[in-house]
Length: 391
Image (tube, rainbow, N blue to C red; front, top):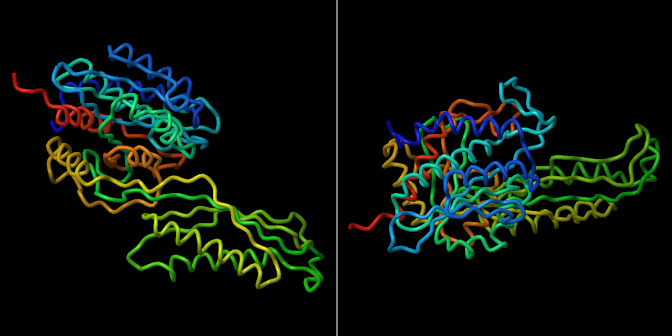
């Protein structure tokens, strides 16, 4: 069996933990129940330290190995928060909170790291410290940054940090990774077009902000097509448009909201500059005014080469080289694990969730059969990265 036997035996417990968390989803930093659930389990396992309130509502558990020669520490991170989505599947452990569900698998990520924590606390077959990081607010709240700014790396002596995310459509029992950018940066933008309102029957006496906004949307789609090297990647998407309410009034103001994604800081700066220029100049050409404001953003999630190779090697030792993709294509979704990788070397890996609905979909559910693979990888990362010295 290509998983750790003891962890496979913990599969029913991991499933039970996940189902409890799935039934009680919490958003962003308001994960008090989830954090309490995690902290209680870590204490029950006999962790050497359990620290709550890191980065507001994050939890960190520390398990020290039985070796006596090393002061090294490796961090393993799982996210805890859910999404503001209404669950539609009638599962036995269906969300009990209207309008909220674990539609990204963070319940599974938390359960996997708890499984690894229990195993490591039982066996302690390593020399150093396993630092188990349970993070709030990955879904747009920047919880990874909050924990880093709260001194996560320094307080727990972390020398390297690793993260993992399930991927629907990727075969169960497989892993995928790549050195360099693996997840995109994300920036939110709000565009305001200020025209001159008027009667819809007298457009010549107005400046039609809806028409201007339409041209701006089309112009933005030319940024990727005609400003970037075809071998580079970026996404610019306008996702919301707010204008007037009456059928016979040209509104004074139109607001557009959207997102941009890139895989390098140079491209990120270029796209931002082009958005700002096009909004201003296209609007000015119609006699309107256009402005853009960029909101909270995540940096590119960029894997460090040495740690990527190490993580891939541990995965191959677990499931076989044929089950590990070392050069997976990057995803244009974003991840605030990027902040942790910006502070310490490490890597981020994809775990196969099998045939399931897409992430952030109301039909999605984490595959409990994937948990032993993820928890086994966490355990082997610690035992391989912090080996016991020969007696």
